[in-house]
Image (cartoon, rainbow, N blue to C red; front, side):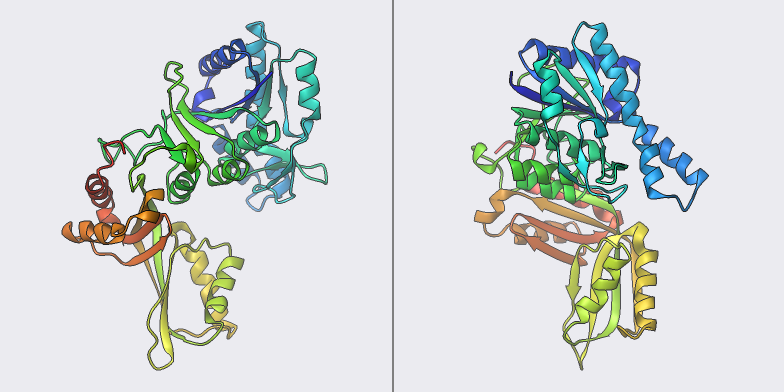
Length: 412
């Protein structure tokens, strides 16, 4: 039998009624001739509740026990869905990560999947099981301890299972009906994409789009897993959702596929740093060691052997970044005159594989922002994306203007 992987997010399994609705979706695919691997998240809000309990019990918690607690939400959902499917006369059983086993690294709360042996589940399929309901977000380390994969980890679990089992497709059911050209809450004319390339989805996910976890897209691109993003609340349809696939599977597309944004950004500038070989390593090494997620980096022109270094990071990591820089200065690793933090900025990006072969995209983007009176603070580019840092108060205006200027409401 061909295998299909179906993943249901927290809102899709938020209560017994929604678990029943999701089970009916699974039953349709069983009727279509598939053996189905269902990957489930915890019920909506449950993981946050569990994390809260851990923090309340032990603020400086043991990460191994954190994983033991926070992974339990998915176990409950998996068991309940298996029971619902059994009530529908569909042979199903639940699988926790250690039972598969989903073999991971020992980086608790942010583990990575090393391997997923297929023997146990395939043996049960051969014995007549039609649905394996797998608890997402979790695995087991070489030491035999439960691990979790980080927030959004059930997406990664689903794609990894699709790759390991050679699934025909991996369907990600969520509370949105696909991938849009931008956030429909900001731009009412935002259009749902029928297809989007892995590279574009990866950039959009990393730049702020919340539809798919970045690691899941990386895995799908690496192993050629076709992903479909669709809503668990719409009626089933062959053309539902958005297919995330290889670039060659897309016939025509706009030069720009979408506009992404990240509201919670901060711009930090080290003023008057010695301009010498190794200074970048001396700055960004301590930041990395402190767990600061540095994104955009700009170094100003050197004058009299001194320069300014600007970088962006999440706004909730500003204090951590400041401490890392002050500690490095106290240790004599770096010397700077001042550290200025601007916590009122946002990142806006345009993404599209068509940018590889079209000149003038950056010039058009900058002209649009100029015409709207939006000042650009920092610019970074790659082959298929351009990102700018701007004042946060202009973020929605910039997103709307760019969406209109590149005609994203119209199909390519």
